[in-house]
Image 1 (tube, rainbow, N blue to C red):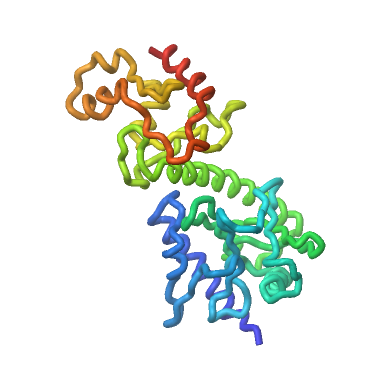
Image 2: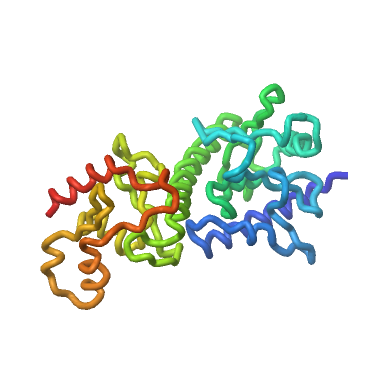
Length: 302
């Protein structure tokens, strides 16, 4: 018999545990090892991720999490128009995994969605609700909601109010997820190091846009990004440092002539004339046309 109180308690405990992990790790994607270990609940371990993309901890009767990986054969869509698609497990609508999600949808239970764009690291979205089932297309439609909605479950609200709140929450989650995943993909491509100084602490690294995302060529793709430590990201954004289409680093002339201690000398001035540390894969190299456009702005600033 389904124990709704136990189910609700575990789901809320999982959400609160994830809140704590995000407070610790910030915008960093959470490592799979952390999610696989999970947390303690009433002297039992609740694992949040496993071998299947649809995951049910042993203590629960219904799925708690859904996930996608970079190498997943299931091509789940990006979040669009306030909803997103999640593909069935396999092609049988009646297998346990899909029936479990269908029951979660029928009962209106919240899920956790783990989305990964680089191996072994996941961005969580929660609470997520399944709002539509399409067996002919082997997909569920889902929306993200606000955590506050879980704290007032007895409040009566109009169906339209729920839809528009979830649509807004999903769009906001989409924007945040795309920003986070752009950073993850760029830093991963550069082997988790600054492409200028080789600093290897991911928590101190950013993904700098070569062309700003508001511009036509500012797509959130790796060839439009550079892995930079926070100091060099700020210097690049303010045209103190430029990178030409031959991947050579240039420092603005007035900065080269300035005297301001060892950090200034070795952290900025010594980079002049050096070469960018490139990704391992040529397909991830910075786009030369974008670099040329950006280097023109650097020259203009000097």
